[in-house]
Length: 454
Image (cartoon, rainbow, N blue to C red; front, side, top):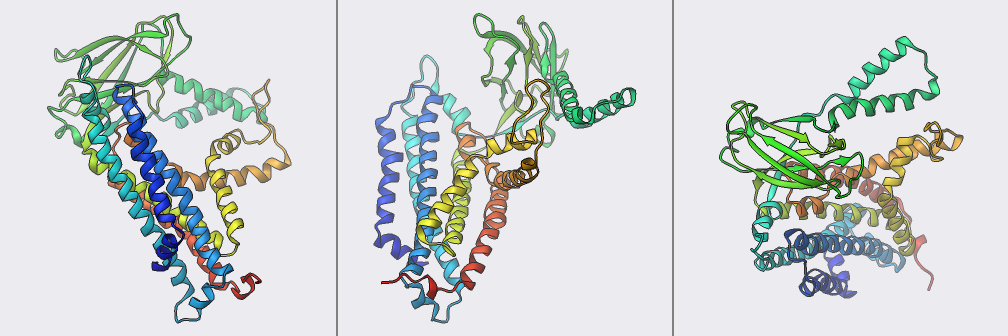
């Protein structure tokens, strides 16, 4: 571990990286001006700085982990160590711990600077005509959890309708997947689409939280898509919250734009004795509106402080860096430095391209669907590539399912459970498998054959 730190200081990596990080996350944001809103402030300071920290530390982790082991092997320095009574797995693990100690130091340093900069710059936001400081405190610099309506059984209802139709008529087996997808969309539309001058009732169960949320304002967050665009691009919606037929019920009428998240506060104690909050959404526009099941309507509530939430977000980023260190060291266990770096970067690019791979997996073909029938074709290539793509997407989903930067920039709570799950999936499961493979390869490698000729 100490040799890794020594190498980082010898090659001036620590000082160069610290200077780049401080310049990117402290000096540059001080020179940039936001638009005076809480959202603009967040975009400049929080999203930008954390993205830069993750990118710079991630690339430097891959470079250092590939270089520190591969260079020692190529320059015959590792032979001086393996002749001592030290197991090779201890050498490998020591380098990993050294890299992670370096990452922890830099991540804590830059994270502390970002947090201090956030608190200082937040005081300069305007309070008139809109109190942007209050918006920042209530919607961004906070940890808020989310409650949603219970998801309907879309798949079960789709299967029942599909089975009923197959009893009455025969279907082409090649079209079954296409027909099922059409039925599934029809089932979803019943729960998502609100026709003009119609109402959609959302019932959100607060559960055990009802007692702790008494006398606490809640935040409603909604988003919808419009069937067609009108001249103004806004749509009249009436929102009523509270028990039906209750005098405590509160109403809000406004014009909302489509494809945008809208958030507003509702008064406390609008849920009933059972802890169920009823929200009615009336469509008073001339076109149908679609509220997605995933994020069309949700209720947010304060779940903790921003400082602890920010620390947990940095913890997930640290898990990402641990995985990159394992990947770089595993590559360097059997490859030279340039090839190991190329191999690691290639895997990283593949991980960033999982959206394209997911589309191929969902359609069932790499050739695309037929434009007339919408049915995916098949070929011999699909039988090989689709299972391979599916396995890649499944592996990278273990990492991509955690998004601390998005959560922090929108004031979402990152729980201890999420941090623990991230550590388990990213560090222990995926990183552990990669590390084990790297250690086995390094243990069995003939180091003398890798020595470069002078």
